[in-house]
Image 1 (cartoon, rainbow over the protein chains, first blue to last red):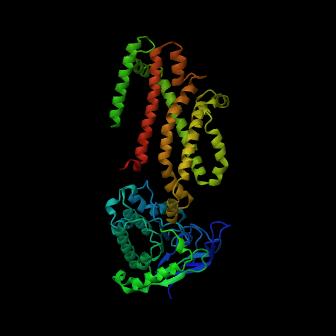
Image 2: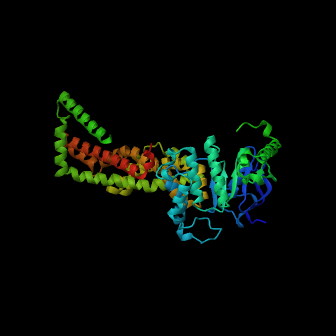
Length: 273
Length: 247
């Protein structure tokens, strides 16, 4: 039995009172070290679920806890990587990657040690750690560049490095590779997959891409048109195998995912992404 | 490039002025070298130097005052939508009104000294800075805020790491655009009920004595004051906002 890292308990959430809620009595559990993907048609609430877990939105009813602590605001231990525009355009790559440590120093008088409930990053993260992540993601030569000078793939590497510098307990990713061209996307998918496996980092990846979900996640939560009361969970235990993309198991999982998405009632008349 | 433009522009101005002076050939348009000579003499030994520093102090204090009030007010309105909705109509109505007309009231309230002049200039600039900062702060991308909040930033850290750098270039642009206005308001404020400053020197001293060369020396001093502030803002922008200058 794995430990539970993130737990959603009977939440109801909607953006407006006069529209049906996105989630209605929804529950979900994420175990330590598990790699999840969330997939579903647009408007199904997959990004909303990520924002709820990140503490950027609060449910109307029910609780969300990460490491057993209710998520009432964003926390440095819960990492979030967005599709784009997350970097600070006025800061160099180095200043972006060391933003977490700088926020930690900014709040140095408020630190509460290793308390999982503390929202702030630790006050003393050595610059060597940021340097190591830059090198690991192959962007150390770009340290003095600004985001506007980088390619889309390089920017996402900066965003990933910036989040991992804070050593998160849970990594949330909202379509992080969608805006990239195919070779760059596949390269980054491989690298993130390897990184998260190495560190046994619990990850939740929101995507609209069936292949990406199958390649990146051992468990896949399929959401449907709101209100979501429960998602469909599809297991993908073979994803860690070498050369998985060319295996029969991969084809089977993508077929299952497609079938699950087609059961979603409004998919038929939904516009192409 | 910049220095070359400055040099070329100055030379061209001198040349055109000289031609104009020859063409008109009356004391009201003295030749540029005579003006420069008078300017140097007045700045070294005459009263112009004192007036120049008095005016510089007034306008710089006013810009600083407008910044320390306008920037926080703009940041607040840009972040708190409810406050903005409450005050936006008031700003909308008062923004186009020429604030300089309040000068007599400022003089009555704050006296004939530096205070009323600094305050009227700051009052004019305050609104320009406020509006620019408010709009810039309101336009910060939600993705930027979300990702910096997810790194653990609370409201103060967002102010420090997002809102301040996001609005800085706009603040400097607002200052640059406002310099002309500031010097114009300064000139007007100094031309009534005072005995110091470049406005006084030009209107009440030189012009009243029909000393044309001194009038032009004063005009030159005022232009140089504006130009110096302009360069100062450019310099500050390159120092404080280097990302605006990368390819």
